[in-house]
Amino acid sequence: QVQLVESGGGLVQAGGSLRLSCAASGRTFSNNAMGWFRQAPGKEREFVAGISWSGRDTYSANSVNGRFTISRDNAKNTVYLQMNSLKPEDTAVYYCAASGGSYSNYRETSMAYWGKGTLVTVSS
Image 1 (tube, rainbow, N blue to C red):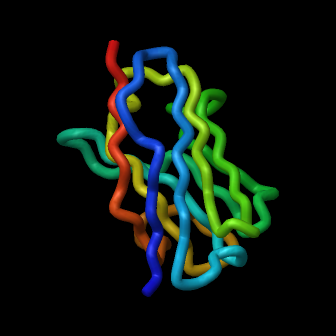
Image 2 (cartoon, one colour):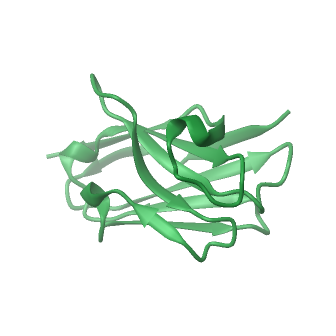
């Protein structure tokens, strides 16, 4: 059974940092692009950051540019999201997703597997 399991969420004060992890099991995703998405209360789910299969190419939303960094360790079948300088508007459930291919446009419809999410709450 293929699973993506996110961890590392929690409550943090504005300006603080968190590192999210996404551990994959059931198959290897070393040849797949991976992404992080988030859904804030009352809002649509949105793209946060993406990384190609090799880790060479990374992308992030304008709202998190310069604050969030996506990385991966293919030997551990794990993707990370380092979040610094957190703001209250970053409060959301964060989801990890795997694309069907080595590269992706990171649209939700392009992602083949999804985790169940981890909650990040940033207090002001």
